[in-house]
Figure 1 (cartoon, one colour):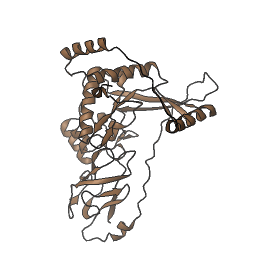
Figure 2 (tube, one colour):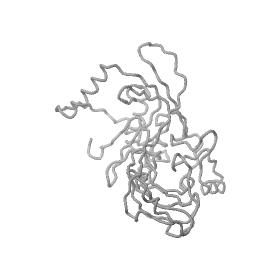
Figure 3 (cartoon, rainbow, N blue to C red):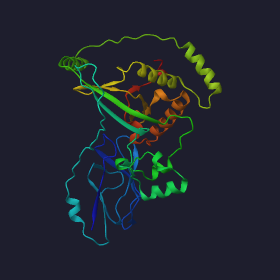
Figure 4 (cartoon, rainbow, N blue to C red):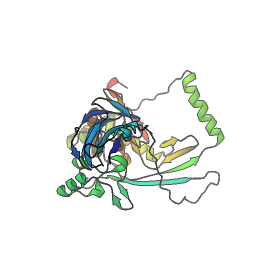
Length: 338
């Protein structure tokens, strides 16, 4: 029986995708785990993995063509099978449901505000391929992991719903001893009063209707610059001023948790983990890869990670796990004397 393959939502903000290249052609026999195409989303170019078995009967989009999420892009089935009815289906783009894991709320010390505690544990905070102890992995990726001696529990899946695919095994780097690659994401959610809602609404309105002035202050960085020069002489990884700012911001956020917060409309989310987004200018705009658990990482770790993700951003190789979850963002304009 012929099956229609639809374009999945490959990032949280994706509404449509462009077929950069097809990795299969009409008449090819394919199986689960094969790569169908390279798809450009709003944030990166990613491989689209196949989960069907059969013959490629139809490719519904030409290379370079753009199509909405959940639209039919290909048909797989038995050779000679009629599939025209499958092409008449109306796309039903639906947002991926996000489930929260709730733990028991802590005893309330202040009866005025109810606190909801949510916790999520993940290596590098990517979508977990685990469900009730089961690892979701493509056959090809599983075979490659076995050949390379890679523990699938340590691999972050970038496929649909956190599935581990070929690319994840190829890009996997075993964590270096002594580095902190595993952390716990958690936060408290505090309901806000009507007064705070009104204040927030009026402040947002004033941003677009009233002239603004900005306050600045100068900070002497002489000792920081001197320390950086010494670190450059001894560290394996060259430390930049930007790395110092990321680390200092992460420590400050841990010290002042009210700054490490997000406005959620009817509540304030107080993040207990520190994920620092670093704005990176690319040809088409701006991307913000995230250094997760930055407060627990050394300057060398931060430096290595930022350089790696900046290169991936410019080559359109970032994956959803690389740009999601920041609790604070830094945009460095030092090259312009800022």
